[in-house]
Image 1 (cartoon, rainbow, N blue to C red):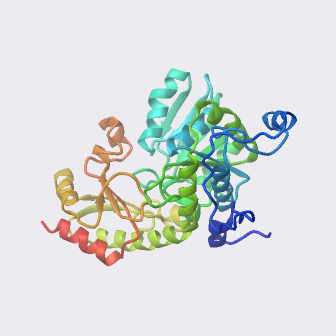
Image 2 (cartoon, rainbow, N blue to C red):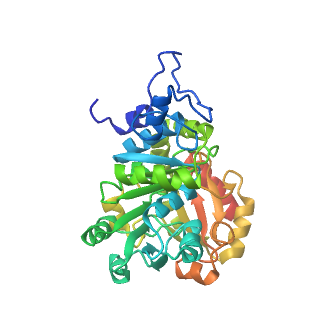
Image 3 (tube, one colour):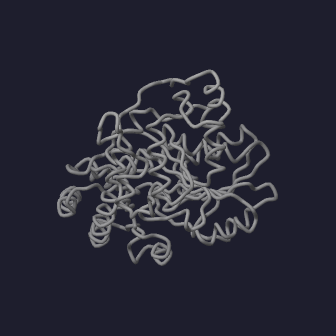
Length: 391
């Protein structure tokens, strides 16, 4: 079959009707172990000489379905599903790095990733340098002879600062250095990272991919050799495997993945423009706003600007806390990509494990509010935020 368009890919890739049952929706395969056939066939499976399933920790049918769908959406060779987004990040990193290696990473990172670089890697003899990722030259200046990886996150969590993917990946290719990108905020619907030169693309599938706040998972997308190495190595032996039920729920969420993201793009842009004009708001960061310092780059490398907004209120953290206690439609909760609009205070929640000095240095102010726009009507969200800001 020729390459399918976006919406068709989201619905059909990785799935085939089961002629034995007639099920129109793929079933959940809950088995922990699988029939090997004969002794000879079992030996061939273990040797990797025959396709099939052996043990749930190695892989399973529901896992392979969402992997095929994710690879197709990103236009990549293959994908590897994991139990969580952090399992995807740690599996990918440990598939590339070992003692004595060096990584250069943007300092606009999800706090869990930053913790790995600053606290866990030193124990393993892996060196990490964090740089201001808004300037590609900062990566070039931080490279060392033993640099094996450049790690990116764009838009960054929660500041929505951008990395220039084309420039940074060109730099990395010239030095034979692998690039990884956490593309969770953007999604493949808004940012085709593989086409922009990124070697390995990471997602918290818990977020937009699943989309309904009901399942946890992660996804690694990339070239066949890297995915195979991660599948047979770090994932298999460290055990960050996705359950069949969570994989099945994520598969259902992926059917509406592009529809949800495009709707959230539209609502978020309208809401960001409204917030920017609100008298109670000090500043707004959203890649689709002309006021974003990297608006030109956003237009160059993104097809849509996402569902995440960062803003700060006049009066700072105290005013923000009162607002978040007064919202009625917006849900005070961490995470993102949900059908419901989620609101949180980054300094006290998602980045509470990062020191204040590190947080402020990376642009996460004490009063920064992070908004993950859901599927509600934009007028209702404006009304809710306006009443919460009325005092």
